[in-house]
Image (cartoon, rainbow, N blue to C red):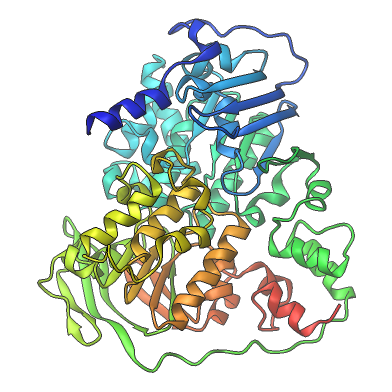
Length: 567
């Protein structure tokens, strides 16, 4: 690490303000407060930032509640969660005003070491909290530090492995797991500690629909049966809304909106498709579940009109034939075939661990397949290095930090252009691209200090500023709110119109319903389906909300419904 970057990290992570009197291992300071979790007039600013990340936030959370924190990307959700266990300001530094109390203890005064006995925390990036190499060891690590008897440790580890469907992975290396599998391991490690509060920052962002449902059902059981207090930040509200007791909506520069989910949904702009339709048709009360929505939809007179299916691109731009790959002799891809046309957007979907990320890495030369062929516009990529391939095939990995190493957002784009010899005449105007992605206000910021959603967009800008012929995106909506996803969808359509082929790996079925022309489904390393997006309607796991609300109509999005149903 270069010296000036080390200095910047010290500044952003330094101790500051009220946290200086905390002592390692000290018992948490008791604070008299009637609420189990009480946030009062809390304001916080990161070091060197003019605009506060949190501004006069007041909340009360009773013990045993399941609370969902929502709002636009960069609105302060992660910051608020980190205040509940003292990571803010003990890790980040900065200035704090107001107070936080968790079960009568003060996280701002005592810091994360003392609060860790009370509050479990699951980060947006699961790898940020891993310590050991293997799944079972990682889950047991904190329990060993607590000095639990071996028999109790084994019981707890077995319990959470079964609860989250990880038993078959218990001896696997963490480095060999998919992003979604790592996310479940991080949740398991937190659950095994059995704290009174569990705080989760987008815990389902990398999970397929079935895995996400399994995780949520596990959390619901712990909340209802054991009284565990859960505070979760999530952008995909459709996954969580029907389970929560309180919805908290944070948006920079605006007062906090908190209360019963139905009440809050009527006041906020970022809502899932089901609620969006409910607002459009004036349904009351606003539906939170598909069952409620269907009852209301049956009373409405809505004409059916089939969704148009676009014609597939005439020219194959990317061809994959018979691709096979194995990790340590264990097959991950098995004879995979698919095509991506010029100006076509294909969604690649499947369960966690089905081989989607491995397939992308094989295409760009980061992994060498044991069999098969990859061709770009009819020319084999065999023998070409990854750097050469990535000049023509842009690749956004699941972890955007892998692509971020400059000291400012604008420099990330400049470095990419310089590496490709395009700095003098960029194919895409960098400032215009940053503005399109909503990053114009953070151009001078250090990228790794941004939220996960913002870092995702910075990495996307860095790989698309060269206008590659093919764009491959691995879970690009992680950390993005509904509005930001809409901007991304518009941008992808614009690039399609310019002839770019786009391969989108995602578990976000709502985004796929909006933008995809075809869906390729992987299972255990094999292509099991390749069809139009209506394929999703037949799956109870992958069907979008609109398809479940109006079965058999061929509709996938709210736009499909509203286009044929004048209000």
